[in-house]
Image 1 (cartoon, rainbow, N blue to C red):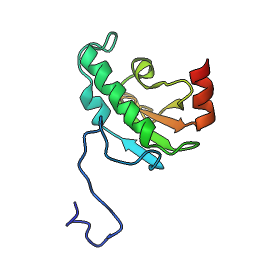
Image 2: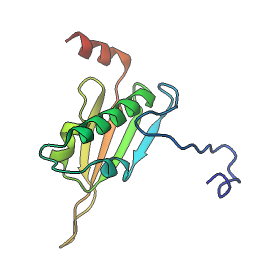
Image 3: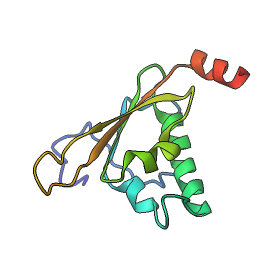
Image 4: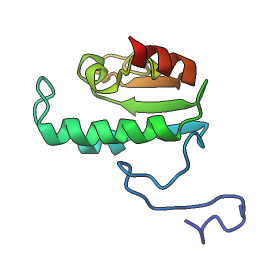
Length: 131
């Protein structure tokens, strides 16, 4: 990618484990996921296996850590039904989580969903920890 986009010297490319990023805290304005989280999930979504819960938890922890407080956004696009993903994504006092239907308007079309998690600031986190 560095060679392909060499004409954009301000772009930096890095390979990391999403569960253990080497990015600084509160350094990202927007994170986008289309496929990474879905690839981590297997088995029954009614009762995800422990490795799924652990890996998704670590992923969410890292996204939380690197998103800028008070407005950093995580955009997640998936075909997975919201009622399955909500328990894995919602984090009270950390971010707001909104889900919208993005497709599936035509006959025979599958719906897909766009999640927008918006990072809250430090004050909300402190209040949540006190509660």
